Image (cartoon, rainbow, N blue to C red; front, side, top):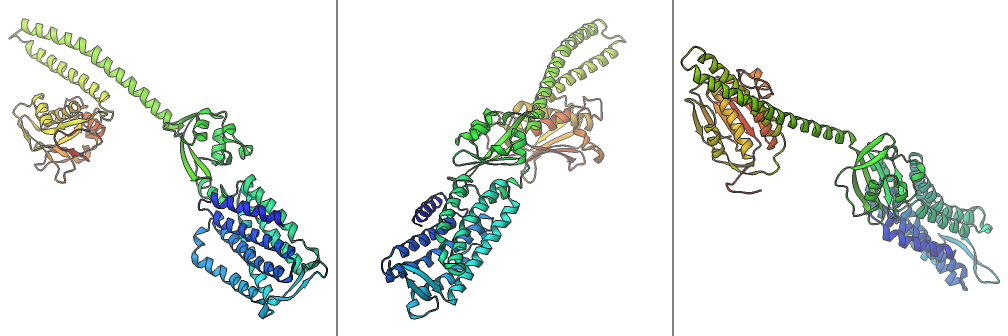
Length: 548
């Protein structure tokens, strides 16, 4: 009995220190109850006088009440019903044991608890206790607590996996044995005295539940809330670095089986060194996807670490991002090929185009004033259009990435410079915008050039172009007083290759690309005069001269 007391006390201290809010304190209370119960029972047996023997016997009721209440409260938290554990519930559960304890310590004045207390005639030790009917009420109440606890743990046994079924069975049997022993000794067969050995077995089973199954470190409610609700792989490692759970997704990704549970994570993940480095090092964080060689081939995993508690361990969420990585790499390869293509177009077409333009100039000098001049003008026009196509293809290929090093860009200056670079004939620019943005000045100027050129081409040589700020301050616009854009064409107008005239069909696509590269959005609508209006929205203006 004393052995049971010592072990139960030690386990109570251990559980209390490792509690991280998942029922450990109530489990520790139950263990303290067992320690008090067995301890006072031992003192009662070893006492040499009737008075001291009875006194220690009375204190055993304190331990039994704490054990029963603590066990039920722990079971509630352990099975995911911690929201029910309130101060009011604790007070209600404690009412009957406190009343019984009061009757026990006043038993000299009544016979509600004890009918008789007999001593051994030779040793003087307490030999047998005959309880009264009130004690049977107390025993029934404690049996109800045990029944509720048993129901909770049995439900858990049926729905839990093998690992957690072992946990719940261990604690169920461990804390049920003392009650069974007490019933056998007190009611069924008083001469048998089986309580002491049941307590010894109980403490051994508690040790198994605590240290073999890591009972207080990773309760099954953690799996119910985390593992069973996720489609990603989940790996649970306890505070001592051992794998205590792995869901089917993670097992498939890492080629693991049930034998992985209970083994050190460093051994389980020996075939996946990058992942092992992240899991076994508490300070490691996977900034980039971790590469593994899975049974299905090369895979990439994003690893998210969640700490269960100071001593409980950690949960690792493994998300397979292989397809995303492959898609990103394919896009990178496509962008590289597109950039190479644009460079080829720019270099290999621009050179012969320049040569052709030079010969046209020479030919124009020789036939000046003669009939072929009109044809040469058509050739020059085609050459100009080809040059613009080359420029636009190159811009479209290289301006699609996000702006990595933005600088303060005064939009009024950009608009003025762009207007100076466009053949505007008798068109008029009305710039009412005096704001600065963070961005790429060359890309923005190219966008304004394309918008101005589009206005002149569609609105005529005398078109008026207005640049201003949106009324709600969320961006800016470029509008004209031309014929406007039909509703049916507004979505397609920014697609590559779309052109309502003899333009390249890439100008507005470049505008849309540059706007998105800056993190803005482009909208096409009507201007106040019925013409076309292009709005850049979600723009964050900054003070002139500001830096990133």
